[in-house]
Amino acid sequence: MFVKAYKQAFDAVYCVVVSTPLGQSQNQNGLATGFRIASGVVATAAHNLHLDKVFSKPLHSSLFGISARALQGGGYLSAGFIPLAALKTVNQQAELIAEDTANDLALLRLTEPTKPTAQPPLVESYVKPGTPCGSISFPFGKVAPTGIEVPLRFQAAFLPAYFKLPEGEVYETDSHMHEGSSGCPLFLESGDIIGLHSHCLVDTPDSPTDTRPVIRLAISRWIPSPVIIAFARKHGVLV
Image 1 (cartoon, helix red, strand yellow):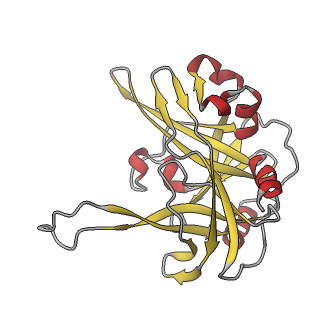
Image 2 (cartoon, rainbow, N blue to C red):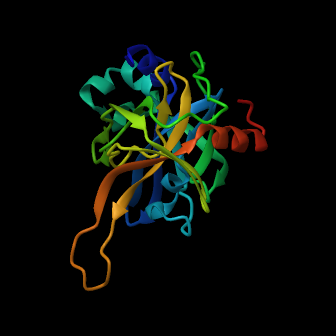
């Protein structure tokens, strides 16, 4: 059902790598997902770019993008790991174009973009509840002393709801997206992209005396493609 759509979306997917030195040879590193929306421009979730993923904290000092296609070409996807020594052959430095913290959306410009393959289109209209959709992301990815773990994962879901909330418009899917998936594309069976993953809902304790752990629910929220398109065009990105 999604075989052709997976291939089309795969060509646009990026692993987003962030890093900031903390002193004494220590870095705060992080991995997330993003996808190309125009030549040399990648969209991702804005919280990925901040220290501790908190908007009130500074942006990471170094931003990079690694295309899934480059990882596949080097044989790193099948291994799920890329050695540090090989990073320079695939990573591309990135800089922030703009971010919208209210919608958890950011645009990155790759400073040395590679020649893009066919561009998966962003859908300009809202899709209806009940629509089948899929996603590709890098859950569980992390920076290790000897390299970067890059497990790529496809998930399928149905779109059960659309909400217009005070903080912005969102789609919801009944899917458990894991750490590292933020910023990944949500796409139709045609391969057309309809959203960008922001976060999962969590069940939190009701009071300070409630000792239940915080539970990550299998309900994911996504930024609809019309919101992405409007933000990109506002900042001069032709989509």
